[in-house]
Length: 144
Image (tube, rainbow, N blue to C red; front, side):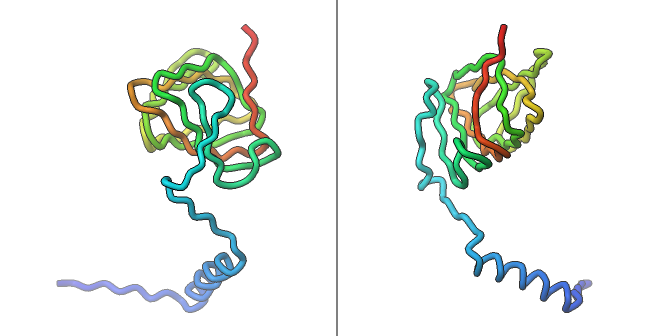
């Protein structure tokens, strides 16, 4: 059997080790098991959020966004650029031109420059997304 070994230069190993140590020492980590998420009603029926970092109302934040099964939102946009991953459920997004895209768990999407979109949570399972919002979160309904 052929064995392969890799030798990393000491400078790379020390750099990587130093990064990990300084990150832990500086307190720059967040660990939140799903069982400890604190869900809050978002003021829209069928929508709740669980913030894990930042303040959604004041600036950049990371949070989980949950839509109840069957939830439908009309065309709208958000002021901050945001990047998301579908965690559970079958999310269906439609852009400004109406083209729908199904995004099962593990899918990624991003909306920048106030891109309009409509959304629905298809099926009988809640849709949960993880959102990286780059500014204060809002929901602005598009005018018909």
